[in-house]
Image: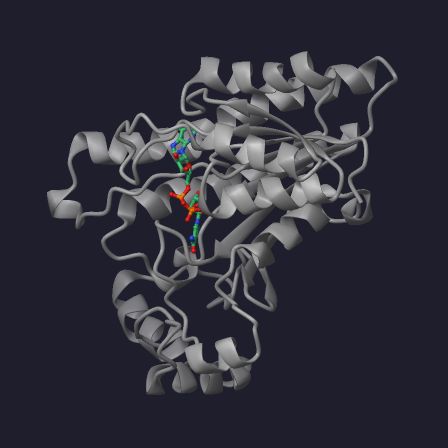
Amino acid sequence: MLDGRVAVITGAGRGIGRMEALRLAGYGAKVVVNDLGVAMDGSPTGETPAEEVAREISTAGGRAAADAHDISTYEGGEALVQAALDNWGRIDIVVNNAGIGRPHMVFNLEDAEWGDVLRVHLTGTFAVSRAACRWWRTEHKEGRGGYGRLVNTSTGLLLYGGAGQSNYVAAKAGVLAFTDALATEMAPYGVTCNTIMPSAQTRMAAVGWRIDRARAEEEAFDPTDPVHVAEMVSYLASPAAGWISGQCFQVRGGMVEHVRAWEVDDTLERHGSGWTADELAAEMPRFFGAGPKPSDPPPSEWQEQYRARKQGGHSR
Ligand SMILES: NC(=O)c1ccc[n+]([C@@H]2O[C@H](COP(=O)([O-])OP(=O)(O)OC[C@H]3O[C@@H](n4cnc5c(N)ncnc54)[C@H](O)[C@@H]3O)[C@@H](O)[C@H]2O)c1
């Protein structure tokens, strides 16, 4: 599926990124395995996981180069894309996956916890994307281009609230919005830009959705294995997915879910005049209903009510 393609994957020394690197290489791509080797909170460890994964790919007969740039810096993003060009003379696929977590309630969130998380997830995604998009645009203008695949990583927490992770969800919402904008900007150059919301058991995430462990073992199917995310990313990186851009997919085991972001849901409208605050105080709860965001899991009585209300449409 990816023979002759060159891919860069950030944070590919561990977890989801590692599996993405293995699968992309398995499908024939030459892979730059980037990882800074930091701890979950972004602090240094002295570990070199990128080298281990690059070795694993080479041992299995694939082509890989290790890279340890810090993608949260503009220089790091440039240097990573340059590493692909230096090794293989081109770049076709970028998977921005690197991430850290520094969760705290907002009233305890320190400046550095906010800044570091925004820097790694959002600035890092920008730094690598910009460098690749510049190359893709130049190639296209010189008549050699027409193929680019950008896959960025957000989080399903955006769907479920994200309490205690305000820095993280803010960054990941930024990644989603950024990717949507790039999909429009890069369409004339044959570049697709999509977002995934992964879910997999890694050091960073104890998967929240319910899994029947006994059944998983019995059926030899582990829905929390990062391989399911990696297969979807391999597909989005392939020529077969050239028709998909500006989309977001959540992947959970055997489920691939299309996520519609930034969608107007219901409209409360009056013709010929606006609303006053006291009128809104009366109308808003009646029309939109009050309640928490839908959560998953657990399916709650509230969710049932929410669904019933939605099925009722505008008749409220
Ligand atoms: N695991 C899940 O269920 C889940 C859910 C939603 C989103 N995500 C997202 O998926 C991505 C991968 O998460 P994971 O669970 O595999 O985490 P992980 O901690 O296993 O892997 C992340 C890797 O990124 C690397 N990294 C961090 N900062 C870096 C930097 N500045 N430069 C280069 N490398 C850096 C780390 O060294 C680490 O190896 C993250 O963006 C995460 O937010 C994961």
